[in-house]
Length: 255
Image 1 (cartoon, one colour):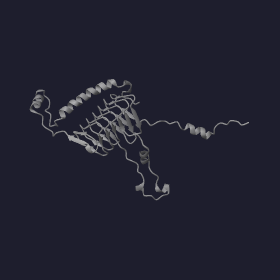
Image 2: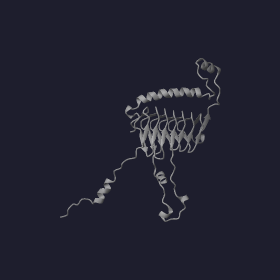
Image 3: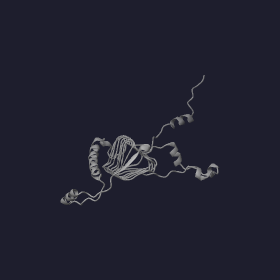
Image 4: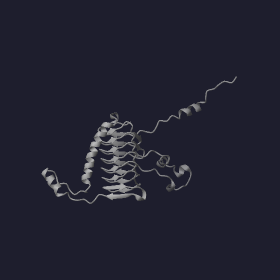
């Protein structure tokens, strides 16, 4: 009579190896005054730093696989926004050192072999707003008081200046540069950029009011600076309201 036998040990060990440990969680350093939703995602091997009074909305994603991520004070990262990039097989291969010709037994020149990519630091300065479902790829630098609206893509190594507005759906190309006080709208060949008008000295009424209040007389500034200052004041109020709306349990903590 035939008898049943247990599966071989090799088969049992292979089945247990299917359990995955999941993606690595990025080291997070968040200021105690920041507010982070409990559904925000932090993945990668490099650190993520969150500044004071910054708001991280639910389901925002931080991928620190190619370099550290720094988010300055007073920023707002909206829902489903992505900072960094999830790992891909092609980039994983390019980051790993290739075998030397002596090890592979071939005399192929080293110039033809893939070289490890350099570390890409992603940096957002203070008072930056990243809109819903917008993407900021590794190596990008967004300067202070800039607003990146929904569905925008800031590509790798792009540099976006201060007080810039990137309108919804626009893209800044890889290694592209947007000077300060610029509005970008449209897409593709139809993309347009407009600079705020030249700086002007404040009017006589402003100078008299400053002297009467014993305040320093403001210097030359673009005409839109008054509107920009008002926008930043409204942004502060919005940040305070958001801090009360987002899940308190996620404040200053990582998921």
